[in-house]
Image (cartoon, rainbow, N blue to C red; front, side, top):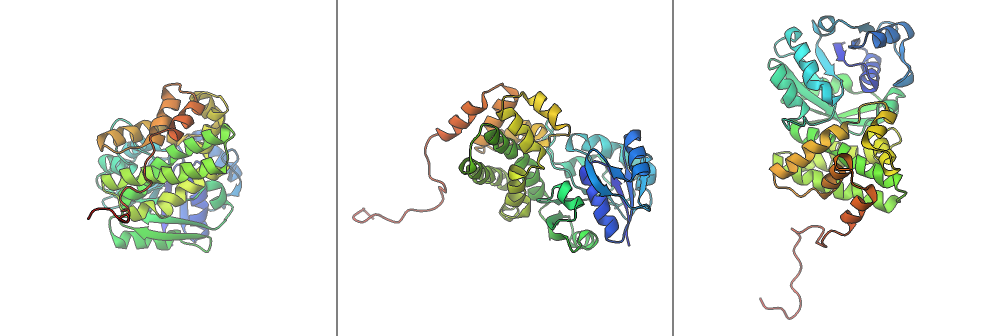
Length: 343
């Protein structure tokens, strides 16, 4: 049995807390919000973000960050990506040397272009930082529906330890050494999911959704490989797998925000209606900046930024994507020599 501190009591943190407790571990959940601490402690349920998923009586709820961290075998950092650095900074004085922190959010910091694990390492240099990612909506994990994810870690030993703690009959976990590729796939797919939602809001069909998913993963992989990620990560659960679920699911905050914008709402109106952090909005500018820095073509990301921040009409953005200069799908594939051509 492991003694685990879960830092962040949103839908994902709560769902993972229940999973880890069901696996036989002692779990302490921390929240910065006193009202949230009281609700979880007294009613044993996150009534707004994860209704119907009950917390066991022996799961501990606290607003004391030091208590949530001290003496724990590992920590799960489950705050939304815009708050990762600030939360890590608050955690740092209480984190022991080589204490494992598993980050489960997805995003890229706009002004530094750093992934979340890199932000945590800057603020908590003594920690052993790992990541958990994949196609995994909290609503379904909380209902114990079959789900698969990937643990990324610096060492095989850490990855396999975390794999053994998280794995259950309904939650299958793979391991990978490619932390960068895992994080880039998880962050950038949120931007593509905004585009998929916009297309849905405009009334477009399955053909359009399939085009955005497949060309979206092509953009993500181009950038990710150029930055040092492994192609296998983008063709697996943390790439195409996560992209599919985020573009298609009714649970997806990014798809829902895009849908509302496709129906005519502004970015802020859409975010207000979703009522949770839409991480793709925070990653969109960073994605465009990375594309420029590494000289990678990312037309979907470019058009999403134009809709979000420049007031571009969503229908015009889709039209421009469709009318881009014609090209080969895979430029690296050679054509056979035509009959009669010179050798």
